[in-house]
Image 1 (cartoon, rainbow, N blue to C red):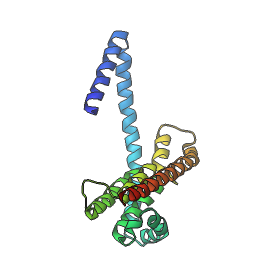
Image 2 (image 1 turned 60 degrees about the vertical axis):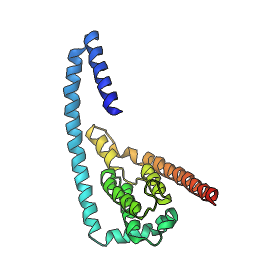
Image 3 (image 1 turned 90 degrees about the horizontal axis):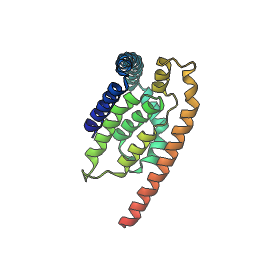
Image 4 (image 1 turned 60 degrees about the horizontal axis):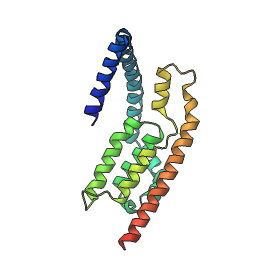
Amino acid sequence: MLNIVWPIFIIISFTFAIFSGNLEQLNTSIFESTSDAINLAISLLGTICLWNGIMQIASETSVIEKLTKILNPVVNFLFPKLKNNTKIKKEISMNMIANILGLGNAATPLGLKAMQSMQEENSTKDTLTDPMMMFIVLNTASIQLIPTTVIAIRNSLGSENPTSIVFPVWIATIAAAIAGITVTKIIIKSTKNNNK
């Protein structure tokens, strides 16, 4: 779909620029936006490398195990069917920790690994299990204490106070997580009742 939408937008933009006499401004904006994109990519790359490195070091130490133990009651509540599966619970915990630290790019491979492990345990391969649904909702809400990616973007674009986003992010992500978890729990419960 995007293969159709983007070319249409580009053709419309060029056509409008030609007929309105703004072709020079279009050329200028193309070069400026590519320069901005490269600067933003370099800024984000540094932040991502730093936090991915920290997560890699943490995974080799006892820090992750301690954090996993702290998150264990939450994980058991959200994923009651996985209480006895320590491997998947650790993968979910690492994903949650990465999201809490605002490391969306580090959380993605950890999340994919957890989903792959849950799919291996899934007896019906073409249907999501209850833990898989809850995990998707949890990742979409993505509670963040330190939204590092957003802070890095705001900093690279010259924000005077890039960390002012922190408190609103807490409110938004916690509210989204509570709403998502509540609705998912209700759907899972109603599905179980209908299947009885």
